[in-house]
Image 1 (cartoon, rainbow, N blue to C red):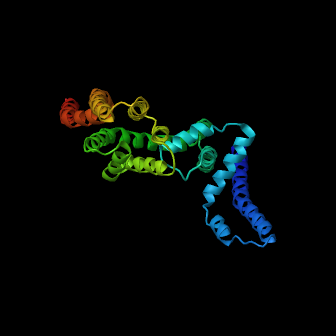
Image 2 (image 1 turned 180 degrees about the vertical axis):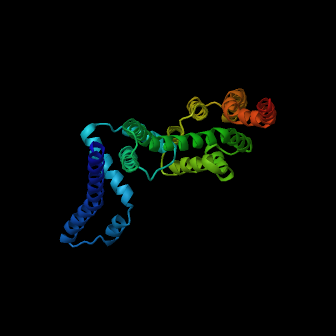
Image 3 (image 1 turned 45 degrees about the horizontal axis):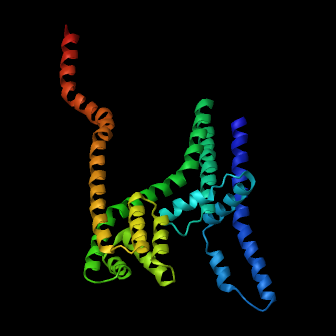
Length: 302
């Protein structure tokens, strides 16, 4: 009875938050529009834009703001760093935090509803509720982190190709900024997108050093840091950029080889689990099954 009442309270609270999150942004938008219209302006496009927003995003934004304001669990800078590394620029840290809270509440509530209808034991109900709460809290951030990890690995893998193109362009008489423009048109994928964004920042007035430092903040890997550090120091000290890039290309390829060797050394350890728990039992069944069957039949006849 206690779990039934708790589940009903959680469901009523969830529906109340959902309804309030759905209505509150539109009420605030209507009040803003009415205030603007009082001065002789209209904002039809803005109202349509607000009306077309996702209900889930509205709910996540409201819940994230309410929980962070009351409990102080919001880590904005950390979440923003993960979002920028994953290139999910339409997602704000507050919305991501709201998804964490919703998942941490919604999954246990669903499990309570299922368990109360199936008459499970109290230990299983409590354990599943706690486990799903932890999974729901960690899942949104883990997804963003995994996407950022794959993206940064793609940048690290493609960076030696960028350095080779920059070296060729510098030896052809093109300046470093021009070689970055040429390389951005030749390289595709994640690194190409970052290069085009870096070149766009330079066109908007940033120096090459500032644009590259922003590139380093978006992709904070050791290889990118070494590349940016070498370029910035070369620009400040007046060292030949071609020499720096050639030495850096050698270092980058050495790092790529070391990373490949590291993955090769980790492969046997990663293969141990599927071998022991999946492949070996199947082999034992196929190889020893007929022999065991014959032994059992022989002993049974005797």
